[in-house]
Image 1 (cartoon, rainbow, N blue to C red):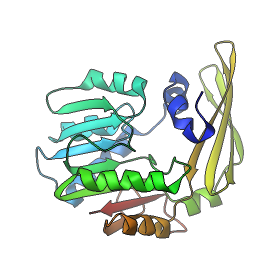
Image 2: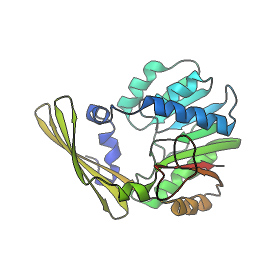
Image 3: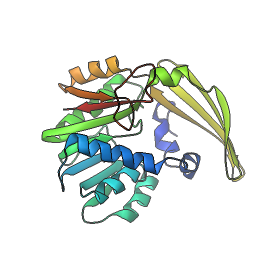
Length: 242
């Protein structure tokens, strides 16, 4: 059984996780990727690592734009499904981001709040150090995180989200510098309880992390159209790093 601090190992590997989040906006993801590769001036056939890729929605679209993409994720089930889309320039592998990468890349993308899971700050810093080592000369990294200030201000403490015949009872709160989401539901004659936890990482905290890894913050955006970041109103905190 996984410890609470390793919640992502079990929850992300279930079919219920993907059912709960089956309304994700693929069009929005594609618009974001198009804006991003244009801003970064990535060239055709450049190599991109999609770090914590899930089922590969970003990877697949990036590959369709002409990039050589590798998607990695800790969830074996997600990677198994993503691999059905593999081709000569699109690959998927199971990988823990806390471990060094096998190759180096022109760009490394860590998208949709796939950071800040770990109890110990040292593990977040290890991920950043792996990103640094995984970049080719003049390579660039992108971290797409929630804007925790707005997320906390607009937090819905309790709600029910219905997916098919399953009612997901969701409660949210902040505890010990983590935004916590408790998810309870009954399915297939079993009662389930899962928890998601992401660290309350502000722009200043990220800047501190980056300084410890000798990484440079070169741009900050607040949404998927790459508008300026505003701590009070922006939905996202998107960091461009070298």
